[in-house]
Amino acid sequence: MSDDQLDERLREAARSYNAPPETPREAMWARIQAAGQRDRGAAGQRFARVRPLRRQWTRWAVAAAAILALGIGIGRVSVGPETAAWEGPSANTTTYRLAAQEHLSQSEAFLTLFRTSLEERTDHRLASASARQLLATNRLLLDSPAAVEPATRLLLEDLELVLAEIAQLSPRSKEQDLQLIRDGMERGNVMPRLRTAVPAGSAPTQGVL
Amino acid sequence: MSHIQVVDPYAPEPVSDAELIDRVLAGDPSAERALYDAHVDRVFRLVYRMAGDLDRAQDWVQETFIRAFQKLGEFRGESALSTWLCSIAISVSLNGLRKVKRFREREVALDDAVPVGFTPREADPDLKIRLARAIDDLPDGYRAVFVMHDVEGFTHEEIGRTLGVQPGTSKAQLFRARAKLRTALADFVRDRDR
Image (cartoon, rainbow over all chains, first blue to last red; front, top):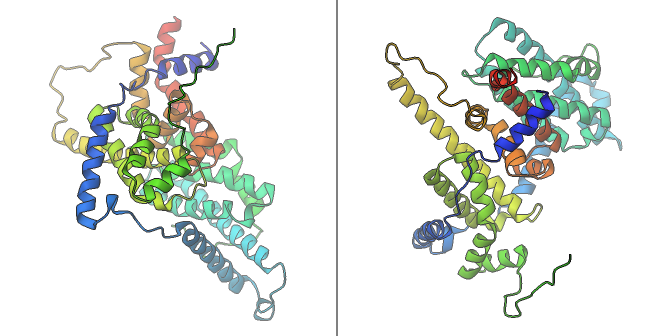
């Protein structure tokens, strides 16, 4: 049986996976109403509504601050005091580009260490935590001007997949999970592309592990 | 053959999600019910597929709508309301599954002594049963994408918006979920091919 034939049979069989019964509308609504009544009693209004916090803007502000802080940090390390004072029209783009380079450099260092740890069969909890941190930065950069350049965007997208898989590792993960991560890194040529994207001689200014 | 569309002249005008939201925020209880009625089937189907248990599914759907009503003022309309509700439902389901797993692990730790002479074996080689077990064993993220795409028919764009990932990530997760399922069912397929 070919993979395609098996996939088709899997899709057919999957339709009966946890087949839902008829929606118990009234029973659930009664419970939701009861919870609403409780909230109304406690807070004087239905479902104790949360005041809009303009969370999108807050999130963007935090994201921008994080990226800018990273960029400024890199700027202080990599640029001399005379040139650091200069603020031209491309300063913003440069900041994002430097932040992206810093992130890619950290990711390359992290993945190199992680690949070594795969051979040694160590506990992957620390790697999972580090991958989650890098994943958060990766997502911020994907939504920033740093990802305007197609090659950088593609690299960040492929990196997201690998980091997401490492972030999901747990002590119960099996050899098959690790093999999928290895395959993912190799299939997308992630490591060679990371090395190409990171200028020679630049080392991450912040530790990853 | 074309059918003549019969329209009930007394049927209420369909109400848009935006209008319902405004009315809910203004404190209209009938709008809450209308919003619930409009979306509960899709949410329940998705949550039940993830939970596989009626009591649990009811609890999680209830929590989804309570959270949704509490946070409705934060909904900015950047995605469809159904997508927003499904993202809450998936978040509630994944949190619930984590709690269930922790509980089960504790149970197994207390009661993992297999009786001497007992050899666990597959009781039924039926593909659907084997597949259901294999899907249950998928990592939660893979399972969510597989259930949403292959079982419930969401597109990768919808899954991306619901889970807050790129559509490409959803595609890759589905590809890997299927790869894991193929591996898990490899012996079954070999037996069938013989």
